[in-house]
Image (cartoon, rainbow, N blue to C red; front, side, top):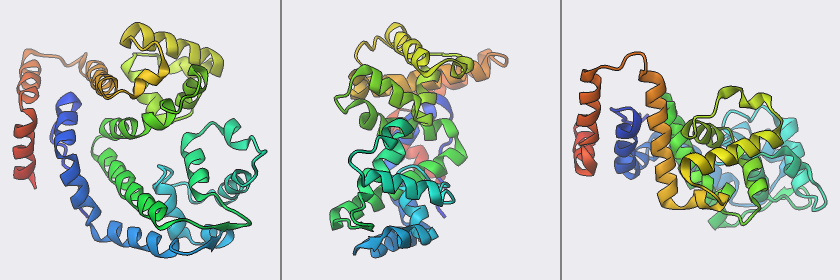
Length: 275
């Protein structure tokens, strides 16, 4: 199995990962287990399948859930059945009350009708690609969890904040998405005990911090490429400050400056030397 290469931490590591992402993802996706799982998903969903058969196939369920960043939750068979059942009911408010963007996306993609899941070839292909990307993100997290959170934020913030919904709705969705919430709380230096407050109060505080720290006045602004990159870089900077406050030295500062000077070409060369 191909293991992601991230030789640096913080913003230097993030720049390296961005510069080598496509090549690393391609190598990872060619790993035998990932390739076989992706092919299994495509084969099983190439024709209509009953919800019951889908839920009984643990391998298929695992791969499909991973495509929606829900890997590891395949044991929740009854809950997943409830999600799919409610998704088929246009009058149900279950998914709204659940406030989980991953399960909402999963339910809408599966869209069971009369107890059967029928997906187009394009939808199955997209799901397989998402499985590979999210599996890679998980593997990245085993090397550096902050990098996984950053990849998750970069790929997921548009689905939450780019929907044309109200600021309040977007904030609630953010608070219900653990990786995206973690990154924004880190970037704005919010205390961990904010979770002790009511959801309404948390949303107010987060909005105030996004405006005062990052200049974000409209939550839809979170989706602009410039803001995405700025927020991720601040997340890594704040994380580095927190981790290194007690061990800061002139030598470590010099190393950080040196690694920051790698640039995209230097990162690419370093990647090639490490493979």
